[in-house]
Each structure stands twice: as C-alpha cells, then as structure tokens.
Image (tube, rainbow, N blue to C red; front, side, top):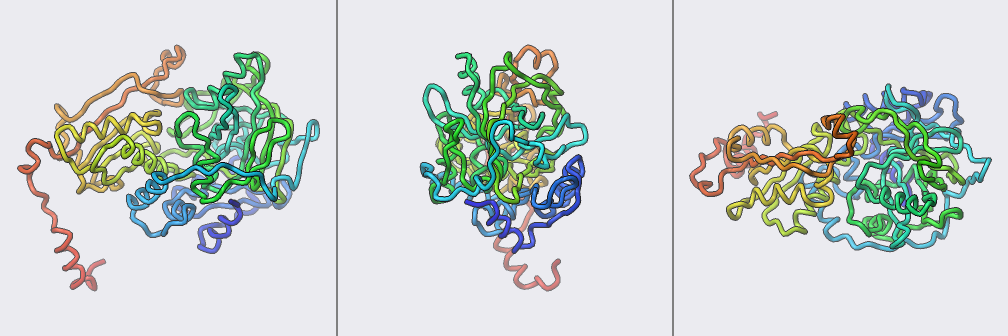
Length: 474
C-alpha cells in the first residue's frame, strides 16, 4: 500500500496542506505543534530551506479522528467510541497475511552504498526546541530478526541522525527489538537492522502496538490491508523491507562497548524531557534506498493533549480487543484520554453483570500486552457514560466513586525511563516499575437498583422533542 495514494485521498478531502520554505530546524516542528493544537490538516512540507524541491516531510498524518477513519477506510463521521469499536472489530477478525516478494519496488529508485551513503541529504527535523539533534525516525519501522527463533519484528523506536552514515537508536526496555539486539550482542555480534521512514498508515500501525512475542507486524499489516505486503529482501541484512517505502536504510547495530554516541535529549510522549542526553547504541548505515521525491513521515511526540499520530485511537481499540480476548463481558466502550498522554488515563465503560465485574475489567485493562506498558490510571464507568467525554467521566468520578472503597493501587508494574515522575535514584538503579490506580466510578453493584436516578430526559423523549423543536435548537 502506497503512502502517496493516502496523501491523495487527504488532498481530495481538503485534509492536507502544502507548506513551502519552512526550515527543518524547529520551524517544521513548531508549525506541526501549532497546527495540531488547532486540529488542523496534515502538513506536507516542500521546498524546505537548504534542500532541493521534492525532498519532503509530512506531519500530523493521522492526528485526527477523521484521518484515522480515512486510513482504515471507515466513515469519517462516526462518533468517537463507535470509531474505536470499528477498529477493534478489524483487530478481532485480523488474519495475518504473509508478505510476498515485490513485483515492483519504487524504494529502489535511488540507492546509495558504502561511502556514498549520505543521510544528511534528507531534511530530518529538529522537532522540539531543546532536542539534542535531528530525528529522522519518529514514525518509523525498525526491522530486526530474532537470532534464535528467526521471526521478524517491526517496531517504532526513535532514531537520531548523528552524521552522514551513522544513526542513533533508542529502544525502551521491554520492547521486542531490544531483546533481539541484546541477543546478538551477547554473542559478540552486531545486530542487523533495517528501518523505514515513510509508509502507509496501516503498514506503520502494527509497529506501535504491543503485539505478543512472535507476532510478525508485516503479516499483521497485510491482514489490515486485506492483501499481502510487498517486500524486497535487504542485500546487506536479508531483512524484508516494504517495497513502497519512501526512505529505507540497512545497516548494523554494534554492541555499545564497540561504538555508542550521545543520544538525545528528546521531548517524549509524556510531554517532558525525561531522560536527558546519554550514551546509546548506533546504526552503522551501509545502504540507503529512496523514492523519487521522497517523503519522510514525522510523528513527533507533543505535549498532551497534542498527538501528531492519533495513536490513542488505535491503542484504545487494541485494549478493547484484549479485554474481549480475556473474556470480560459487557464492555461497551474504551477510551485513551489524550490529555493523559494517550495511555496514562484509560476509561472503560461496562454494563455490570455480577459483583466484582468492574474491578475485573480494571485489572484486565492493565494486564494485556497493550495496557500493561506504562499506564497510570484505569477508570471504570457504567454503560450510560461515554468514556470519550471528559465531562461525563468526571461526573461519574464525582458521584459514583467512593474514595474509601472504590480506589485501589497496584505496585511493581511495567514502566519506562520516560516516566516523568520516576525518582532519579530508582531510574539509576534500573527499577523501571511504577504504580497503577484503579478507580471504580460505577454504581455499586450490590445496591445498583437503588442508586438514584439520573435527572436527564430519556433518549426516546429527547429524540421526540428534537424532532418537533429542532428549528429552535442550536
């Protein structure tokens, strides 16, 4: 599937704006941030200062509900939770389709090898004001193969440009590519790596979800596309590379004692600079491939509720899928709050069927592969609450959550160095765990029938009244 076809759809729907003559040093990043805060269109930067026309960057690609719906081929006017439900249903029925050799490979329009490799020819932005460098990889697919089991992983990890042939690669502990890389290093070997810096949203999407160990993201992408992903075989790594990638590289990641560079700081998705600059592994790039007039896709983390990628929608869908896989009945909706950094505040709406049901849903939401990573609060509400409506959720917390009996804290959960409230001594000791709070903002099950009625007209009466009086209503 081709990114350019998707951009054509956005243009036809007036969801894409071309921006010319911006500087890759901060201007692209700040324009992206300001446009995102205003729920503006996707941005295609061209004629970037100091670069030839056609060397482009696109940002805010799927930042809105509408553009996420377009990426999935869904109606663009679906209510929030219904969009999440539709995406969840796609994930429930997802049948992986194995990639196939490409019949055509636009990514091979231009190829650089060895000493001819020049990563500086691409306009990799410095996205945030205090970033320690330029980042070509914010919406990337980093491709590695497990040296023992042989399966291929594609994940999204940040990639900094150090010089014309060297990239920095930071992978948060607990992620699959980090285990794979360390397996090579334990043998005294460099880890073969490929990376893609521009792809269709449905090719990229599996790379930022927490699929179980052994799940191949390119097969998942094929399932989402409804057809096999076409790939080429990397000449240096043997790794599969999507044939319609905009820019791709091959190289190797040597053990850090062989080579490392100062990486960061980088403004991350919690909305802070949490890790500072430090020594991190590098990719020694051996080959660069790119299309004519290449497009780098950028999805810089922004201070919440900003979201340059709209991941929170797909995260919510996948967590809902996890709850159903775990056998939790009565789930009516799930939402990841944008102000909660996409994953810090998860709201689950359930129709309670038995005592302990709400608590079971909360525990399940923080236990699946997607929900387990670096959360903070899980709020469970009744089915009459729209989990995407902050006013609804706060009303439920205010009127149905008894602090003495309906809040529970769990410690020792999977976290990350990116956690802004992790104490420095804990981070230094490598204790990358945090606590989670479950807040049950539901009617107490054992006296639910006696709970006071809500003073709101019924849906039937509202609809009847609206039909008669809609001319006077805003």
